[in-house]
Structure formats: C-alpha cells, structure tokens
Image (cartoon, rainbow, N blue to C red):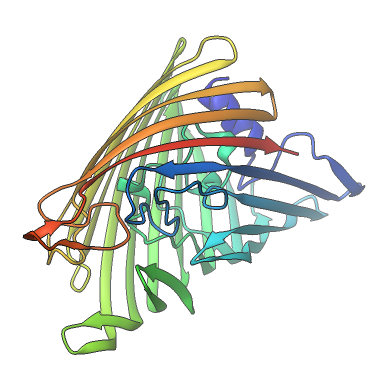
Length: 366
C-alpha cells in the first residue's frame, strides 16, 4: 500500500480513522490503533531512547495502544481526544496525547485550543500509528531531537490555499509544556517551559510533499546533570526541520533533516533517507541515518545507522513488519545508546560502540 494511501487511511484532518469501528450516535466516533511486537539486539548497553533494547527479547518497547474519540458539536465545531498507552521509563503510561476543541472559521481556515500535537516532524501527527509508515519505528536520528516530547498545551491555527499546481498550508502555534518527563539513562529530567512557539508549513503537488518546520523553546529543566550534581537549569532550544516525500509509481522516497541549537544541550543535526518499493502487499525498504552533535561525549549523540525492512499488508487495516537495524556510535560519543559506558581498556571510547537490532511488529487499525 502506498504511503499516501496509508496516511489517508490512518489520518484525516488533525487525525481520524477511516470507517470508525464504533459510532455511539450520529456525532460521536470511536476508533483506535495498536502496535505490538518484539525486539532484540546483540549489545548489553540499552539502545534507543526510552526503549532500552538489550541482548534479551523485549516485548514491550514497541507496544502502543491508541484510542480516539471525536464529537461533532455543530457543522463548524468538533472536540477530539486521543489517549495513548505506551512503554516509557520502565512503565506503561497512559496519557491524553491531545484533547482540543476545533472551530472551522472557513473552508480554508481553522483554529484549535487545548492539548495539541507538536508539529515538529513530517510524521508528527501520526507518529504513534505504526500502520501509517513503512518503518518499525521512526528514525531516531531525527525523531529524538525533541527527546520524545510530542505534545503541548496551547492553541494553533491552520490556513490552506491552492498555490500553483499544488496546495500550501501554514500552521503557527504557541503554548506551554508542564511537568514533561525526559528519560536520560538512569536519570529522569522534568521540563517546564517559559515560552514555546513555532510554525509548520507544507506544499504538496502530484505525489510530492515538501515540509518546513520551526520551534523555539525557553524552559527550565529539573534534575539536570551538571559538574556539581543534579540541578535546575534554564535552557533555550531552536529546532528546524526540512522534509521531502516523493511517491512516483511503485517507489516512495522519504528524507528528513533536523537541526537543534541549544545552549545547554549543545548543537546537533540529524538526517535519514528511506527508499521503499511497493509490490502488491509487500513493501521492502532501506533507511540510512546520520546524527552529529557538538558538546561533551556524555551527551553527544553522534551516530550512523542502516536498516533493511519489509512491510507485509495483510489487509487495509493490518500490517506485519520486520526490520534489521545496524547502528554505530561515532566520535567517542554514546550515539543512540541510552548510556555512555566507557571501555576500561580504552579510555574515551564506548565499551561497545555498535549494535545489530532485529525487530518484528504487528500494526492494526480498528
């Protein structure tokens, strides 16, 4: 199934599923999605943010359940909430990923207020929906730049218009994040913003989509590791993202680049490129990823990776995925590993700086 068809099935507007499985009445729809699977690596150092994949079978790191309720108030107003249960920091947490009221001002302009998804990446609006993309998980070289933070409280607006051969949209937003927990190895950091604003733009035509996104955050981090111990520190960060998606014939191309500038967290950039080929119900794909950063080796995430995978669509709402991923930390950094464990025989080097990771998942819409 082609990328556009997958996204259209999983998403409509902000997010909605095709053919909701339950209709409580004419104005309320209930729908959902589920991903479950198993991953194992050949390295005892935990790998990938918040997943902690090691050299033993891990049956929870890829698991996520989402339930969404949409209620139509009138012909211009709706309320939507999405509940997500997923594995994070050694626990299964359930959160309202979004909870907002939306008002259509016109056919081209709408506003929303409440808890909203941060539009920082190309796949932000369906990042938890495994059925909506080819990979087992979005490439962390790009999608970990926000340390797993996906939501905020505030408001946004979206304006869309026809422009030349395609459609252009712009989405400014502003708000705050309060008490968001960030796993940093054995430490849990809490983030509270003082200011947050950004903008996301997209231009799409004839199977091609170009996106540009920007976010600026000023925040306080509690329990942040410093040379004198765990402290509260103030940070500022700016993240800019560019993405290109091309669907031509049986081929899909996705590439995305994200750059983060931050006084405390250091500057970094990440990139990935994916080529997928659709043949009936099978979609093999290849993904390459790079990440480079500035800062001390304890927080630097310099890495390179390659992943070869296969998606098998058993039907329009169920897909199996298998993926073999190779990752390597570079420049004496911890790469995409969760911890920096120094080799006692080679000071300044990671104890084991590469990993082979195998994953299998089942992805369902309902």
